[in-house]
Image (cartoon, rainbow, N blue to C red; front, side, top):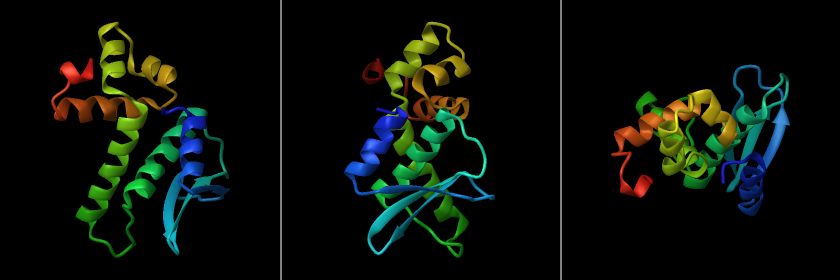
Length: 141
């Protein structure tokens, strides 16, 4: 699942609209307005397909588990929401078995990112997420 088209399909199936508009301070954001979730992508600068997938996937994580916050939300709560959005994206776009199979075959982070259509940053986050949660293990293979 993790490919850009899959992520956009999942957004559409869940009634989540993805909009492009200039956001000079961030690449993406999500918000719930009157019970409906929206994802905003910065269209003021070029973004690779992998960056777009990572942004849409992360924001889908916020939308699908309902993890939103405001400027006045305590920092520790913000960090929990961000970690949960990352977890959602990792679990849906960077399967544990695939990641560790590619690592065992000697692939570098950038090569894995290219194969999975995501960013090197998320490949590294996925590695640490899975290692912190008991991988590699039999369920991972």
